[in-house]
Length: 256
Picture (cartoon, one colour):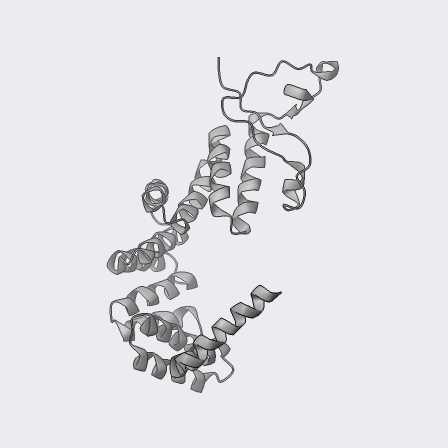
């Protein structure tokens, strides 16, 4: 018997966002066939306990909205099954879901799954700047600076106004000791002060503390009100004070 593409709408689910107030749970893909009556021959089909069932396309849309809602709240692991369900119920959502799953899997550090989705999309849209940028950032997260640089340069070649790609390229270049090139790339995406602050951050991560301090100071000379640079510089110049402040803040938070 063919599997039914249905969604079960049950009781209201409280306090989990506006959309989820209307949805309790999804039927599994192996849900039993509906045997309930259809009111007057025209109403919606009903499943066990009189629960309303929706056609596959509507079910897929609800799954997609649920997934996007969960992702927006940072609940990536919870969003995955809803994305997968949406794609199963309605293949017309495949590309949209694949894009989101690639990014979500990347954040969840499930790199093989992320790259499978990325490559699927890249075969279809090889000149998509946003997609190339996402792939480049995925490689960056894995410490593959050269691969990251290659994809980010491709992203920029397709859209020179892609500021996120410029910033990510700057990060990849800075990780490869290409400081001047990194700074030039950063400046294509952010202000001159922010570019130096970004460079300083990478230098600090790489353990080049003195160079990071110089870059932060240069940023503050250009933009004295750049608080992120000031805070970061203070941490580098006063590591013990920064450590104590962090502990105190954590303690205050726990006391609330």
